[in-house]
Length: 271
Image (cartoon, rainbow, N blue to C red):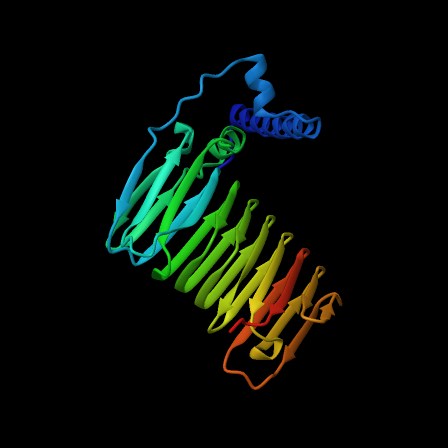
């Protein structure tokens, strides 16, 4: 069935408008335009969700799905047997949610594309604090960060999974059985001990990982496209290269690097 001429003109106009709009948006961003400038020229009344301070008991897993804002996971006194969440100045545009479901503590903010663009410029003051008792061991921790930042003072879990789009994650200390870190365009800096396998993947982002232990604690499966991999004293930069290193270990570190960087160093465990 042939498309009527009127519809052809309509869709052609839509396509041209979309292309022009994207081009103008790119020009504006390239010239330094931000939502703060828009607010100065045409003030927008910011509205915030109520600040919360809530405590949860019996938590086995922590699931963060964050579009923007600043998240801090901090240590609470060891005798405290509950996880506490506090918030400050979270824009309603982020549609913040915090709830427990079958032992899983879910903390989310909205990820719809247009709200994400707005939130990225309006969520600088948004802060979420998660207080976990010192030594508290979780079964699983999963973090998905689109923009903003996550800071972790210390965390113990059987499975640690960190996925970053364009934000930044800093982990000062962790203990986990299995580790997964994926960084598309952002930055992950982490120090900790992995008892099992580690899987690190970087697109155009950067991963800096300091592993507690020795380089020979792992076998290695390395895949480097255009970026660079540094593992201990060795650097791998050959385009499209793959390497397998066997150290007769019962655990493996897999590293895949697209255009970005993955740097792995080792720190002896203190007795």
